[in-house]
Length: 453
Image (cartoon, rainbow, N blue to C red; front, side, top):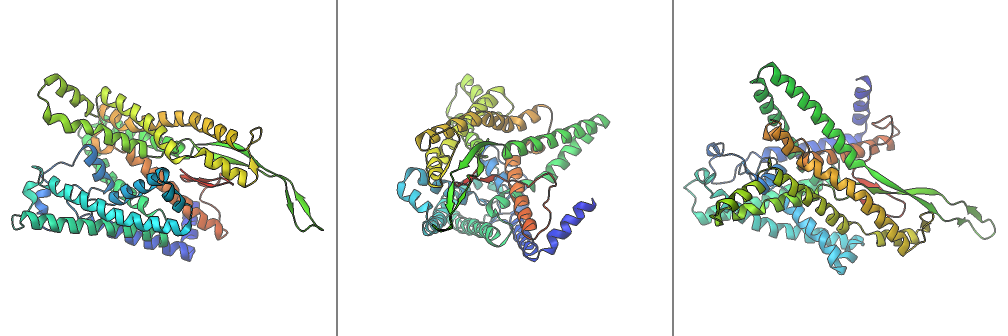
């Protein structure tokens, strides 16, 4: 405890780090307050009479910190910005002109501006869809009759678009002037904001079962901690490929010195795709719900019901296969072994026993395929853990933190934030946060190029 207090004093004694932390906290508080401000034309007292959305809308509600189900001005959160960013990232893979812009500083600034413009368009479309969602039976009573349908649509689209742009601005400011990783930090805060209430509901449920229920709760907490440790290992797991640098001549012709070749390594992430495969798989599993109202065949309806039931073995089997498939697909999109091999060649570095150029690219691709398989399996297990927890009697709210999208994002962002704090401590000649070594986040670097996981 004494060392922990000493670490906090060291963090607080660094002026720049203290100001960044305070700045981040203020913007996060503004975001959480805004999540409880309802849209114009919405009656707040009527919102508590409906259950939260499920399926894909449940994911959106989770990313928005519950603001989606509260009909808040931040109901769409930062998801339109993330969608626009993913689109521009994929465009860089497909369109050569965009890929060229991504390699230049001026081009990256243009892409950032294009992403903002695209965010406005995406938000306007999603806001219009959200208005239709508010007219569903679950929310229809919450809409004030003083607003005409057109006026309600217009004000809602404008307010939601402005709210998303404001959240996007806060994320960028946290990245520039705060602790960093602004967008991810906002999402994480929204997700973890649900944890106290979910744990409280689980405690009440288990407490109603007597002393045996509290013992089960302690076991659940122990398993919860074990899951977090497993997700940390999955997030930070790397396969190190040894790397050598060629000998170099340093100095002028008269006083030249030959520097011996140095050794390093290329860290390849076991889970390069991050949380994206789970998000894609959840979105795909939501598609069958569209056809539930168009089929009168009881057998087909029962099968669709199994596909959309997170507790069924059919759902979990198909969901796991999709996570594994999307892990390979997304890794192939973001990981370019040919480009990495070219960077190694330009930096006069090579993998021992492997020829530069195409053989190096083939070798790196083979290693990546091998380590992606166990990473994909562990990611699939992490994805279905919340469903397994519900089968064992855990309430749905608390079960969502036993893996899945919630904890993968939470663990990754916390590791990134701790890495930022530790970097400031080391730059100011303080000890790091860990005695056994430095904290590594989701971003690892090699001598040839920065690889973002």
